Amino acid sequence: MTNEGPLPAPASPGAAEVRVRPALVADVKPIMTLVNELAVQQVMLPRSPASVIENVRDFFVAEVDGQFAGCGALAITWTDIAEVRSLAVAPAMQKHGIGRTIVDALVRDALRLGIPRLFAFTYVPGFFAKMGFTVCQHEDLPHKVFNDCTHCPKFLACDEIAMTRVLDSKASPTRLFGQPQRAIPLPQRTPQFTAPNLPKRG
Ligand SMILES: CC(C)(COP(=O)(O)OP(=O)(O)OC[C@H]1O[C@@H](n2cnc3c(N)ncnc32)[C@H](O)[C@@H]1OP(=O)(O)O)[C@@H](O)C(=O)NCCC(=O)NCCS
Image (cartoon, rainbow, N blue to C red; front, side):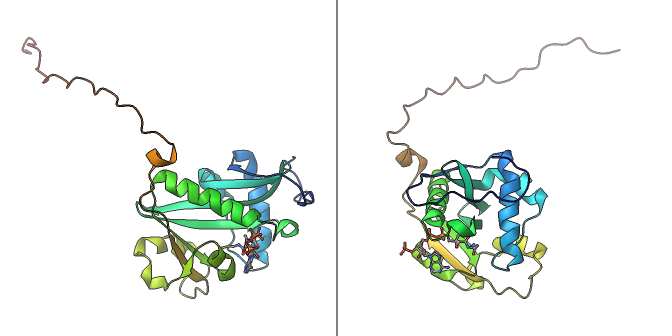
């Protein structure tokens, strides 16, 4: 896929294969194009090029038969909470399960990282309810989550709905990746450092 020009017309999702993978820097342009096209329609917030480039490791990308079809990001806020952010599916591809597949990938990534709780600010509470999120008050979320809000044009007039989902707190990377790792022998303790006897100066 070329990164020039508008998004290509997506293939029909009828029997197409949907694949979600971590984003590459080559995905920055389609991510920005999609998110900012939807932001113009006021259904989500815009992202600057810098914020997508700097945070590209947060993003997952959905492809339908190898063509970019959507994206979503897991932005870690604190050790126990992360935000589902910039979730977007190309309009022609919506309502075919791609949004759910992206959210599932973000949830798996949160579990891999040991993060027990997700939140989102959204205009589509019905979709997030289907993803297991419940509506909460903005004040129920830790103050740290509002750090980024200070950069938002809607700061102090936020009309997005706060939603949160508690993940399986017993999940851990060890469980996710099957058998526990074999015990690795720890190196011998570093012997106490003793200053060498150096000749005195002058
Ligand atoms: C919201 C969005 C990501 C959903 O993606 P999608 O691929 O269309 O959603 P899916 O097909 O995976 O839908 C999963 C379920 O949610 C439901 N759903 C999808 N969009 C919905 C909506 N707007 N309201 C209520 N339910 C919705 C579907 O019917 C489906 O239900 P089912 O499993 O019972 O059949 C997509 O519509 C989109 O990009 N919207 C514009 C941007 C946006 O609002 N992003 C959210 C920013 S927080």
